Image 1: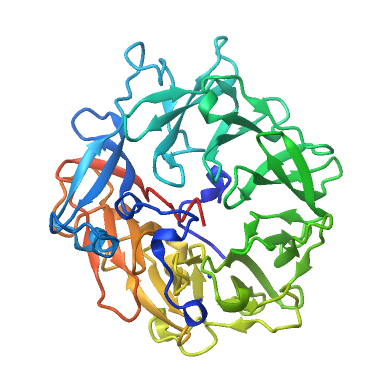
Image 2: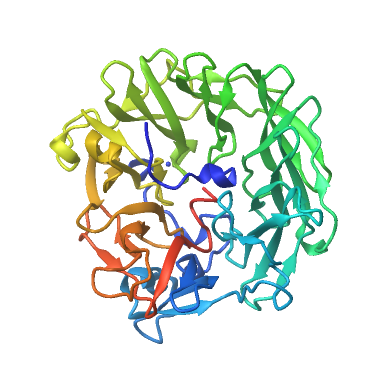
Length: 497
């Protein structure tokens, strides 16, 4: 399954409405998320006149000054009277700006956008260059307080490739590549102690370590580690103590990103066969009794399966739902499947369901036959719908516009919410603090040095309610900027699922 959306693997990041009903969007992330901050947008902007690149903030202006309740604020991003634009950084080369030295590159290809913390209070950006001898590549991170705009810098890190905040925001996790061996490793840094030396993570028995995911309501995180024999295993890391606990036993297959269920009881990932390259979706139970083993959900299917995604909303009686995509090895047809139950997922009980097996009038040519899935599966924060991008094979090969669709679990039908007539979708994700599914879409056909005008907006806001009115609204910036990587700020659903 090919994808033309920006790969969140660059940052090492990288759901049911029918069961859960309405969810309080303001409390999806364990504590109140400010509705306005949750719908504020960060983006990388390059000024057409000066060609200087900075980080910008776009915030909706409420229709009425007295719209102070959460319900009224929740609609602000789609119904705002206007938007305010503020530059958050003043990044200059040389002595005028400590972030950049001569020859440094702001936001390198491995980490090309600002990374917000979960509550939208801080953002981290990377600049890279070379050491004093001009030989080895190094990088440094600026952590920006979005209220005061104060910047604090980390020490230089050899081979720095990405940065993430932990879920609670107490630490930074920095991924770096050894300049000699090319192996990936991790270091941690306590944010309140900046600036300080980094603590390099040591995982016993591992030759290479990658960030695999965050643990909810914690500063701990998940890593996938590879030993000298090429076997991969999963461990949890407590950055406060540097404690490492193996939670899933080693396997010969390569592991994909690890997804944690909403209850925290299960992991899901993909296992890739080293010979055929075929992927299967697998799960492991976290019962605390010791390292678990993976159980394949799709090993018996004649399909290449991946992109497991848990419903983020709590269902009644601890219902778990895991969606994933499978491509038939013989016909190439892609489908979206769902496992749901209250116990440990297995291949036999209860059975998985093919959500897209019936007629799909809204998808190109009316059927999943001949389609190519071109984005990650993504639940909206309330678990009502699943988002996916698709096009016919020719458009996928030519990198032409795809259609963004939301799959309604009530009727198992997909609804198109953004297509080629609206622009060219390059990155899409949901607002976490909205009472209805609201998408932010980066339209790369409009990301250039042009003044914003009707129909030419790089940042689009889309109503993803399959039962509501189709709404695609451009965000007016009021200035000529090249727009890259727009992201919702607080509760960002790309980074904190």
